[in-house]
Each structure stands twice: as C-alpha cells, then as structure tokens.
Amino acid sequence: MTHPNQASKASIFLRFLQAWGSDRGLALLGLLVGVLLPLQVFAVLALLVWGRVGGLGWDVPLMWMIHRSETAALDRAAAVLTDLGSIWTVIPISVAIALVLYQTKRWRSLLYLTSALLGCVIINRLGKGLWHRARPDLWPSFYPHPQDFSFPSGHAMTSMALAATLGVLLWQSRWRGLALILGGLYVLTIGWTRLYLGVHYPSDIAAGWMVAIAWCLGLQQLIQPSIPPAPTPQTLEEELEEKP
Image 1 (cartoon, one colour):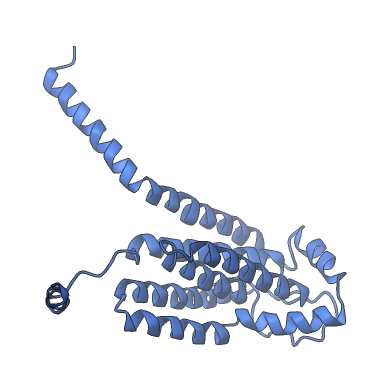
Image 2: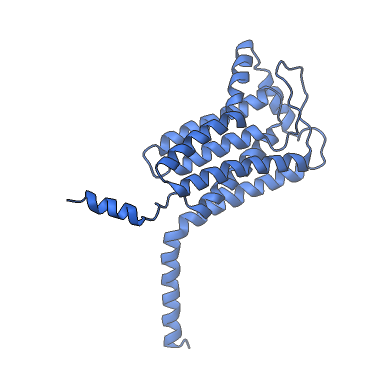
C-alpha cells in the first residue's frame, strides 16, 4: 500500500517533470536532432574513411554523375562560387557581423559567433591532420588541385558554420525564414562546387556539414545567444531618464 506522503511526493515530482519538459523539451530535441544525430553520422563516415584509399562505394559514382554535366559556363560559375565558402571569404563577413553585434552590445551573440566559426576552423584542421585522406583525382581539371587533405571538407564546414550561426542569431526575428532559405542554398551551392570541381568526395562534404551542425547547435545550447544581456546600472539610469 502506498503511503499518502509518498503519493504526494510522486505527484509533485511528476508535475515538476511536466513543467521542466515543457520548458526544456525543445532544447532536448535540439540536442538529440542537432547534436547527437549529426555526430553519429560523422562517426560512421569517419570509421568508413579511416585508412581507406579512394572513395566510398557511393562517392565516385556521384562525382561522375555531377561531372557529366560539365560545361564551360558551369566551369566558370563553379570556380567563382566555390570561393564564397573559403575561410578568406567567411572571415570578412564574420568580422562585419561581429562589429554589428559589438556596437549593439549583444555580448552573448558575439561570443557565440566567434566560438562557432573559430572552433570550426580548428576542428577542421585537426580532422584533416588526423585522417590524412588524399583528395580525389578522377579527371583532368582546370581548377588548381588543393595540396592539403580532404576529410572533412573545410569549405563545407565553414559554409555550414556561417549559415548555422546566422540561423541561430536570427531565429527569433522576422528574418528567420529568409536566413534558413538563403543559408540552405548557400551551403548546397558550396557543396556542389567542391564536387563539380573534383576536389572533394561527397563523404568529405557530408562529414563537414555534420561536424559544423553539431558544433554550432551544441554551442547554441551552451551559450544561449538569444538571452538578452543583463541591464547595467548605466542602462537602467538611461531607461529611467527616457520615461516621462
């Protein structure tokens, strides 16, 4: 027979779980879908790639399928567009965004942007140095062949990191939909250029996307850039002075 006090405690605990779940349920879903699932996909790809020479079973056929659409116009477009995913393009854009966040005193957002993008660069360099995967060399190409390693793709990581951080920063604004659409097109375009130019396997691209998503969404849960900054005595005085 259950003691009345125990039943009461159980009821209180269940109410606590319900309140906590409604408050943090979305955060838990974000961790599962946005962090754990991408990390699992990356882990599978990393194990399949480890010590392997050449591409996976689906890598090369997909690359040849994309290469069959080769034209002079697409050559020029791919060569220009692929630079939009380069770190040397992403850095100036990030600095401009960081300056806006600094001027508007959005310190959490500034910390999040800096940590997300800088962390992706570091992770990418460590990953390339650890896996040592040679780049594909399937056909003669007009595009200069990069001399560093292939896994995971740096262009895929930096483009996804930029798109993900902007999506997080604009999530509670009216620009959320536009950020998601443009960010998705941007990421897919950069991924296509790397495959079209023959400098990455599809598994390189997928791995780069997965790591960037997990890192950026994990940091979002940790830093919570959407939380407004705490008011300082100076801002409180300014607000009081503005009131009639």
